Each structure stands twice: as C-alpha cells, then as structure tokens.
Image (cartoon, rainbow, N blue to C red; front, top):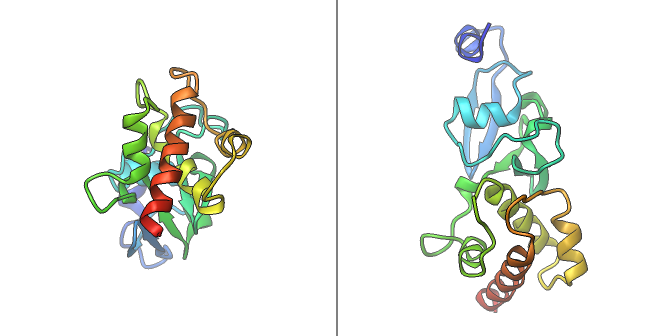
Length: 173
C-alpha cells in the first residue's frame, strides 16, 4: 500500500484519531496514519517541500524542523510523536520583508551553493540564535554539527550565521 492509499484509507475514519498540530502558526486537525514520518507528512501530504529528504537516518540535517522550538530531524519522527505540538518549517520562517534575516545572510555571505542543505541549515541557525544570540565560533560549529553541507566548506555558512546574529540583535534593540 503506498502513502496515498494509506492517507485515503485513514482520512475521515471515525476510528482514526485526528492529528492535532500547529504548523507554522496554523492549528489544524488531520486524519493520517499515525506512523507516517513527519518529513513525509510535511512533503507529501501538505506539499511543504522545503523540508528535504536525504540520509533518512538523522545524520545530515536536511530535514531539520523546529518542534516546540527545539531542532529535530523530521525523518526520525512519526506524526503521532508531534501531536499537540508546534512545528516550524522553512516555509514558516519569514522576515518583515520577503526573507528572514537568516535567509538574507545566507544569500549575502555565500552560505549555500546547491541549496539542498540550506533549509535544514537555516532552521538549525534559527534554533542556535534563539539559544545564543551572540554565538562564539565554537557555538556556531557545535550548533551546526548535525547539518551536513557537501558543497560550501562551511566558511560562508559561518559568516552567514555571524551576520544573522548581528542583524537580529540590531532588530531587537
């Protein structure tokens, strides 16, 4: 049985408990297979393809999302594990302008090349800067240690994190 058939089978069933969840600030109820991976739910069911699938074992960080403001790998979570929680994906990260300051910093400082790891990396930076508004380089490297980039060599990413931290501090002042 493929994912679409599972969704059709569980959607609207009275015996299937609803998944109550807040995604990017919007509270909804969904009838889905509770064992579906969060990454598949986001991408295939909701069409939020910013969350990427790569290693599928929680080592690369391409699927990083915030669950109740904690960075987690969506490939390692089933939807029942996030019931009642708040999920933030890259689609929910917005700035006062079109892009969030973290995203703008990645553009200005060459924090991406192919862009595949970028959504997960940006979510990791969001979590990092929430905990350390003025991170040291060691904190930056540690905060990004769960996210792999095979293109940039990390120099641009580290510069982007430092710029984002500066810009976000200026906005809050």
